[in-house]
Length: 85
Image (cartoon, rainbow, N blue to C red; front, top):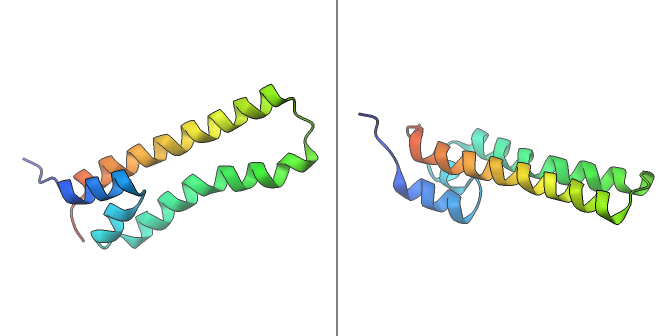
């Protein structure tokens, strides 16, 4: 049976990557933060050059939020399952 880690999962639930950081997995923490921030930063950089209707902009923000939520959920599951280094 695989050992699980509830406290790091709870930490990651409150702040993405915190559970991995508590387990000493700083590389995974950087990966999670980068994966969550990169789409937002890229969209903010590209937005002035794009001519978007408010509806399209809302759709893009929804996709960015959906992607970030998926990364966050993956981080919680990873903190729960992956062994301490």
